[in-house]
Every structure is written in structure tokens, then in C-alpha cells.
Image (cartoon, rainbow, N blue to C red; front, side):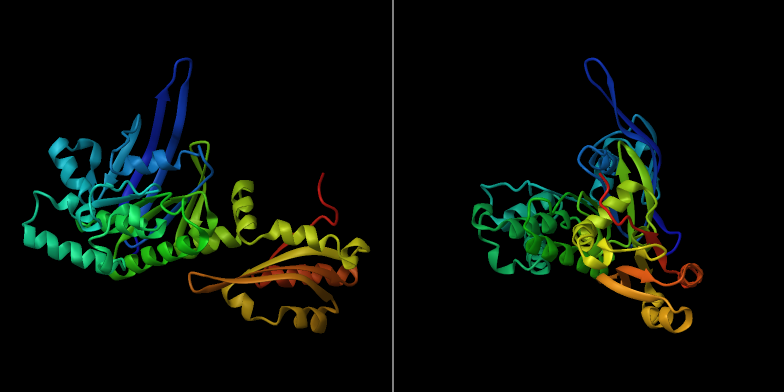
Amino acid sequence: MANDAIITLDQIDVQFKEKTRAVHAVDHVDLTVERGDIYGIVGYSGAGKSTLVRVINLLQRPTSGTVTVLGEDMLALDARQLRAKRQRIGMIFQHFNLMNSRTIAENVAFPLKGHKSKAEIQAKVAELLELVGLADRAGAYPAELSGGQKQRVGIARALASDPEILISDEATSALDPKTTSAILDLLKSLNQRLGLTIVLITHEMEAVKQICNKVAVMDEGRVIERGSLLDIFAKPVQPLTKDFIDTTIQLEAALDSVRQQPAVQQLQAPDALVRLTYVGASTDQPLVATLYKDYNVTANILFGDIQILQDTPFGNLIVVLSGRAEDLAQTFKYLADHDVTVQRLDVKEEA
């Protein structure tokens, strides 16, 4: 829903004092998450993303700035009010944080103790375990479960208090790729079925690509780039963002292979090695045929990748464009006019 901010972080600053210096973990960050978003915050270890997200429920109090969640100033709440507000913000973690001496059902029930009757708790636990696909494991103990099953328990427990917001702090980092994909699918399903707003903290752009609709990239405590998933993938600005995206589409590996091909090794000006990036409607255009038919430019495709992001095609081609200089100039203009991003590539790998 447009303009329906559910989380607003304004000029958030978090500093930690060490013996000889102050560490700026979060450096004047603004962030707005709207109701229904799956908002990915991505960055390498030490970027400040986990510290930032812990500010949302005040597990980490900011040094300065304001935190507005579900319409309330979190920093103005007293201890009782803050406990109540945190009930509406579920959280799942990388290492599950399950109690090994309690059954799966008892782990999920734990947040409900003292808030509901025994019968209500049993009904709620059964409902949640069904929701995460573990209805048959209620009596098992954590040691009997796989990593993916443990994370499903963590998700069920986080949902016990019927939160409106779910924070996932590197929740898939300890899982294998297949299990990670299944957990991400579950989170996307919960977003759609329950109207849950999700903030996903990760260092894996693959996870962001699979389920997020919005992305913020963090580095050294700052948000260096943000936008819709499609905008970030199609038109990244910052080098770090480009690195994340190129890694997830394995572009560097493809480029290493492409540079060894005779068509590239023997390239002569004005011919050019280029990367073409296109989104949505532009993928419906017969680009290669049009370049030859209208501009007498041939395109030798050396690498191609098309993915679906937010139900929209997103493609990358590495091609050698061959023709007269003036025809190539017209070709580049045609591509730009049709929302195809052209990046000239070096024939030889940079030292």
C-alpha cells in the first residue's frame, strides 16, 4: 500500500565506545519500510545492518535519531509500553535460539506463557506448526530436527504473538542453498497470506533477489544505495551494489570465459564488447534482429541470462557488436531509447 509507512528510521546514529576509539556502527541512516514490503538490507559483515535492524525494536538504542514503528515514537515508550510494542515485532535469527530441553511445541508456546489459557496456547501452537509445515513434529526436540526445520520452528515462535512485522536477521546464513530457498519461499508465503511486513537482513544478494521488493545496500554504517528490486538490479550506481549483483548472476565468471573466445581475442575497432541489460517490456523486443535489419549491425551473443524479478523479466547479454562506427553510434542510441543499458567492457581482464 503506497505511502503507508510502518517503520521510519530518521537520522539513526549508533556509536560504541572502545578503549581507544569510538566505533560508528550506524552513521546517520534514514529508512522507510511500508506495510506489506519485504525489504532487504544487504551488506558484508561489519556493514552495520544487524545493528540498524535491532534499532527497530530498540534491542539497540540509537545514540541519536528517531524510531517510529506502527505510528509510535519508540524512544518515548516506557518499559511496559515497549514490551507490548515488541509483541508486534517478531524476530528470527541465524542460530535459531531454540531451547534444547523443550519440545518443538513447547518452544513455539514459550512466548505465549502467561498471556493465554492452556487450551488457547495448544490451539495456537498447532495452527503455527501447520503453517510452517511441522505439524507432525510437535513432540520432537530440536536435536532431532534439520537446520531448515529448526528455522521453521524459529519462524513459528516469532509468529506466536501475531506480529505485524517480522525481522529476519541472517536467518538463512547457516543453511544450505536448497533449504535457504525453501525458507525464503515460506517467508514470501507468510508475507502474502498474513499481510506480514518483513525486514530481511542478509549478505546474500541471492536471497534479496528471490523475495524482496525493495533493497537498501549498506557499507561502513551507511546506506549507500536504495530502491525497488528492479531498479537496483537494472541500474545500480555504487560499485559495491554492482559487485553484489554481478556475483548473483555470475557475470565475472562468464566474462572471464568470454574474454578467452576468439571473437573477443581478435576484436578490432570499431567493433565493441558490450553488456546489455534490459528489464520488462524491452525483453519483448527482437533486439538482435532489429540491430541487423535497421542498422546493419551484427550481434554475436557470447553470454545470456534472463531471470524473473518481481514477476518481471530481467536480462543480461554479453555480445560483440560489429559494424561501421556510425552504425554502431545509431545502435547505441536505439538501445538507450528502448531502455536497454549498454556497458562497454574491456577486452582484456583488468590487472
